[in-house]
Length: 495
Image (tube, rainbow, N blue to C red):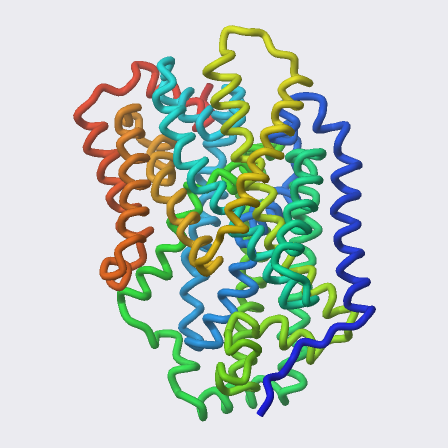
């Protein structure tokens, strides 16, 4: 029996090219705004509206991991794959309702543009120790994160259109770099909104059409139960696996490309409402991805029936067989959109770490710098970091989506505990922050490299827990800044 194949025609190609043209056009149209200053380039001048922030935060946090990996996991594991999305949905709602408001108030009043900026201000640190410690994991994990996104884009183009891996890498990187370098944060947010709508459309229309073609929800459930009763049991997983899945949510508070969306909103009081919008989109997209995997299992029965015997191919395969070729082209664009919406935000964070946190705030701190010159250096840094990520993409050998989770978890473990504690705990010290960052980074890397440890529980769980412990213990042994309580008052909105 031959493997089913993905069907491509001119309608499919036209839809995908239309998507790419829109992305490039946004980069061109937003160039003037983003050229006016570094705050505009990296944070959109803090003028973003609720709807834009909600969708940009959701899409930049998901990447193609949601469309490809979660759908593949649902194909393999069944309904228990739902726990891969529960943790981050709840955590990101919490961030919008509580910590996000405090972060936006504080960074707005202190004129902080980046997370290293925030830590330096919150800890009243003039030695640059906290800033340097924060930049280290950002550069380590962000560049590898961007590289993984470029590689995922290349694989998507290769699987969908038959391009070579090299051409796919160049196309992916070229489009992302162009509109990010030219349009900065505004271009990133506007493209993220379009990409979010595209992802939501694809993740709603495909499951609905596939279920209709299958014969309805009842047929789906009966077919899955006949294959294996565990496919419809959401609790058919071990405790360690459950903890690891829920622990994916630990990454959200430490990923700067999500936090900077909170920092960009025009009014911090809008963030709880924004969180409700974002959570609705998160739930809809997660529902779609899980159902795609379940429907694929009901139709194809076994992984051997999929192209390359790879469960992560279920999304494009179902789309090609159940949608009009033009709509299928849009669903392929949705995969690409998920990749690009994450890569552009991460690229911007990495370049801000170089230009804002290293160059402007350390090496040129006593020199007046023209805003347009800073924007020029920011664009150059974006280009150079993209080249580095591209080189890493050519050298990549491991599975892309495991690298994504490694980088996601690494940032969460390194920065997440310190971010949350800095927003609520006056007793926090700069030495505690540094200890937590270094502990989270080290544990994530060591645990990830040891197969017997990974078999127990995913690396981001112990890395985050030990980072929290390190922050608290070292802070209790050292002295907090004298202005600590005043800093908390700014976050609460009393100053």
